[in-house]
Length: 584
Image (cartoon, rainbow, N blue to C red; front, side, top):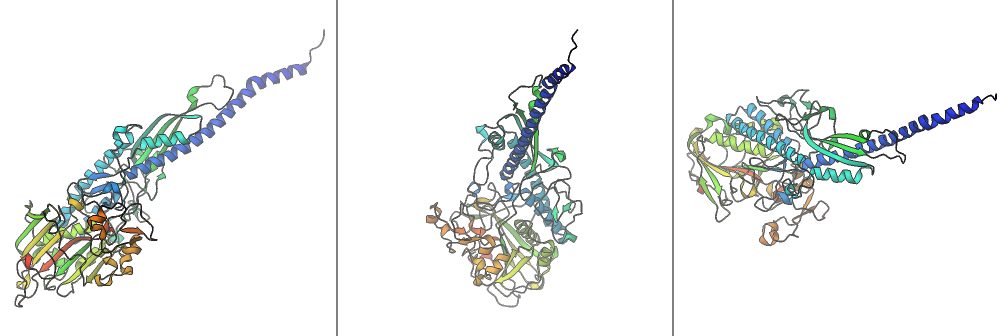
């Protein structure tokens, strides 16, 4: 009997093992490696798509009936989709800027112990809560809208009136950039907030001793998002936004609720990865071809840029005892009122527009002179957003007046948080105007020493929205010439202007015609007319609001009848006969 060769059996066994064990294992491992590479590439593409959705969220603008145009990010007044009835673009205010403004003014009202300012803070805080609720609902609805839904394309717009379609943008990006073997099965976009993470771009108020913050509510000098940061017995919560859109931890994501500004975007994708191998692996489960990719992103917010409106204060007869500082204005016992009357401007800017007129209003609470000073002061601070330091506001209130008759105090917000107070000899706002849908007050009152002043308040920044703010929507009125902030006869120069964020150096704009030819009918009707150019003289893509260059006038207070009672003067208790070379 012939003996069998054992070496042949081993060779056969090795061959069988290679065919049925080693080869399939290698094929499976190769397929898995290819799948891992494809999943990794897919995850990177999904993360990039999530950043696109976050960018879209920062571009959405709501038209709030109290605060005007509101978004996650601030935008300067340059967008053709933001125009006011006067034809000029409006700025867009970031929601965190609004939260920071109301919170800071709550602290100011508490420090000054002023009940009227505290009342106005409460009113703005209620409106802020409604704005947050509307913004959250807008985010949720926009992210849930399906791609290709043309009926909703014009519902959410950016500052240039371009439609915002996050789902469509995400889907288009994925289809263009995913590997060929990766197909989209489903896309889901949601918004929410982060627990213990996130950023804001809003600096805490200064000085820190008055900011009412702690280590748990601030980070590197900025507010923390998604945590309660109380101030003056009120609760405040900031959105999570950064200087640019960024990826954040998915494990920290929490579903949207009513307690937070739900600014965080979560993108969930189910992808199908087709086999890359030419030879199909037996018993391969197709469920293994599906990939679940998640990206959680924090949107961006641009800084609150551009100069704010100025406040002018005029003593036609010079300061007198009892009216030596803003603290006197705000004190309840300073004035003994004869009559305080409030008016609303309707039909246009009074007295510039032919159809404009002043209608006496009937406030629910009888106004007093001190309350009117507090109210107008509050709205000027609100127009400055978070720019002023709290101690600068207190210092301004306590500073003594030293001007002579018919001199003009101009109060402006500086870049470093200080409040500039200058006496300007020439008036860039020579006509006393109350803007349409804004209001004026005339106070006939008495102070110590037998002085009986007539005080006129003109407030152009109280009502901010297109719905309630008239044709300028609560924006400061443009001065003339347009570059008055840089001219010595108006108390300015380029170096003073840049410290206030104004002028060529402050706005990085070049003005073509300082006399304001854009206000003429010919210039307005000429779409190619460019009042401003870039810092280097190049054409701008979009023209900004004219008051953007020098800040404009937010409100004006004129005090007449402040000469001593025994001194013969031409002043009397008639607001139409106040001296000062102004058109009233």
